Image (cartoon, rainbow, N blue to C red):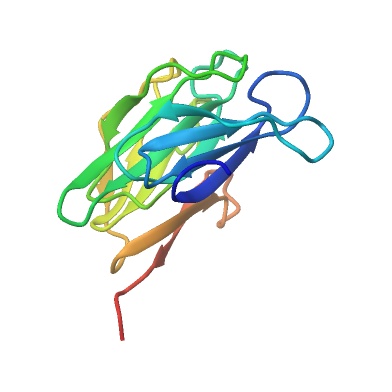
Length: 181
């Protein structure tokens, strides 16, 4: 078992041994678990690191350019007390992570993706949240600028980044939950 309420997973080589490892966002434990791969399809026992409140989505990428994968988690919080943040945990390259740094990312962010949205060679973050979408431009050292908000339909719940228009710039696609009925 990875962690209580695992809602999403990301794959990267967190300890630099050439074997795929797994990270899970644990919504019921306010944490992220890292399971280092053994190379035979099995994993070691999870190491757990603090994250934000109710991490709903996790993405792995190198946000500070040191060659080690880092983690970003969309922290939805609870319905009565939303977290409104993304937590970034910088990887140490040995399967461990530094303490999380939090950035405001809109109301109840549900999903997070990483891409270079402004083509400066630095990874950025985007979230789908109950108020739309938010983009946080990366500074290249593992920190991020204040969010920029965008309208994204009714109740965005998932977000994906790809070059949908063929112009070489990542675009965003947002899935909208839209409520019941």
